Length: 104
Image (cartoon, rainbow, N blue to C red):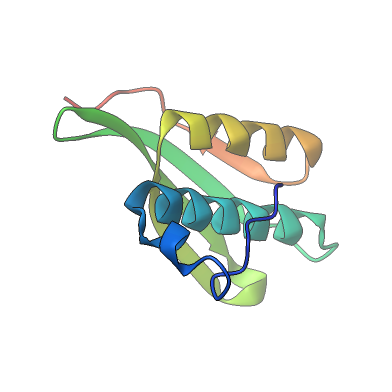
């Protein structure tokens, strides 16, 4: 993953909502990747398409009972593609339940 400049040094960059969204998604996907590399029992990932206004997003439900954490977030199609590559890198260890039924 690419490294962004420090928030203190480039505060003006972080005023852009698209950059903030990209940074948030990068942090989430990096945290999931790190969690999948840990030898303790893996978390589960569940993805389903939803419509938010006119846009298609993917609802990601992530749970890891070993760490007592869970999270729900919405991904763009590009972020979902990155998630697929992360899951592929981890092999069979994580569970990715992806529902194909698209919300109207």
